[in-house]
Length: 154
Image 1 (cartoon, rainbow, N blue to C red):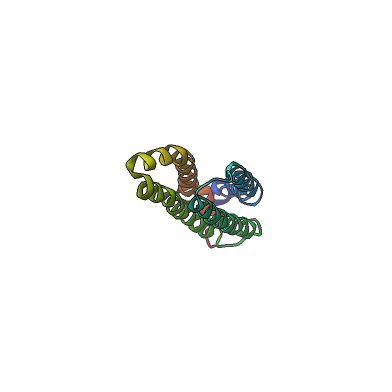
Image 2: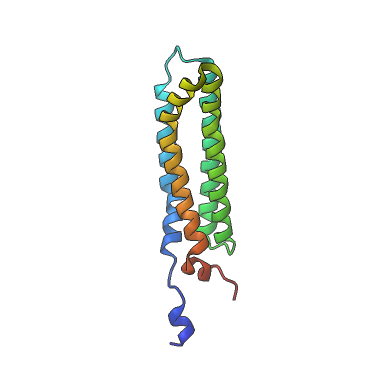
């Protein structure tokens, strides 16, 4: 065994786990979140809240399908896998920031600072967790020698 092959990273376990999350666990989590959100809506809910939930549902489904497509492309061995994963993670962070800001803006406009504060205590923990997880995965895809070697061109 020559020196180059010994130092080459073997396998891409983190990438495989990332793909499994995109294709299986992520969609299950998204569907569970959507189910919980819709089951918590009461008949007397503000119409605008129902509209916000509809927008959130549509965006969540689009991001979920996009993630599944990216996961399948990576699993199929796309040479662009590293770049696709990085792109997906950046898009997901930006979408989450945008979707997270909409209810806060609405609450601030309708109920003032106190309304926005109450809304943020409900939405911020989940949003920060999702962004943190995306940033950790992004750091993995940017900094990992194993990923860099797996997707380097010969």
